[in-house]
Amino acid sequence: MKLSDTYKKYFEKITNNKSLLVILLIGVVLLVLSGMPVGSNKKESETKNQAELISGAEYITDLEHRLAKILSSVNGASDVSVMITLSDGGQSVYARDEKSENKTSDPRGESSTSEGTYVLKNNQGGGQSAVLIKNKLPEISGVLITAKGADKSEIKNNLANAAKAVLNVKAHRVIVLSK
Image (cartoon, rainbow, N blue to C red; front, top):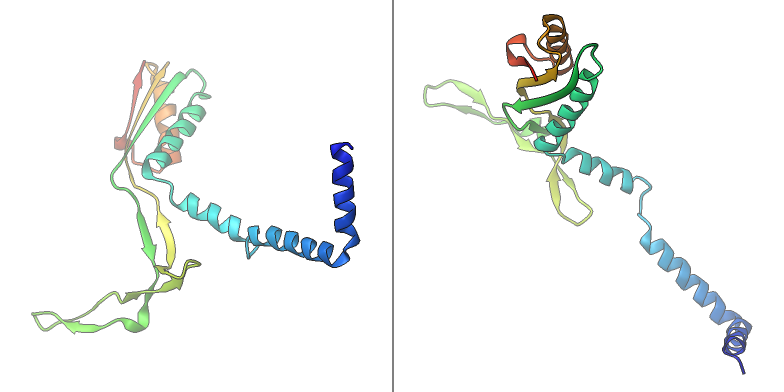
């Protein structure tokens, strides 16, 4: 007797018992459903949380590559490299409960308002975390651009102006050097 014949007979025995087949199908369905996220937005929220956790180093590296690529398209400029420095690491702003603001008196007798307590949300794991309102990007303190062709004043000015416009930095914070 072949092995495949043995399997066929065994399968026929199982399928003849309809209640066993129904239980088996229910078990498979439950296994499949248990692996699925509860809400359809679970993957979207995980992706969003990962995007919010991008470090300042990753942000700046991406920005440098994108700026170098676009500046390479400036007429007369080639082999462009960009270095961006940051003055801080950015800032996260969390929601605060306005109702819990306390008026207190400072030692001089003047009244001041404290900022209140953080608004918390329940996490899926049973814990709590503060409600994030927004992430402020790190502030750019300086930009260094090196490029072939930057020895010509027109190209140098074009590169500097483009960097100022894209990064919203003042002229004294952008330096363009020739390679």
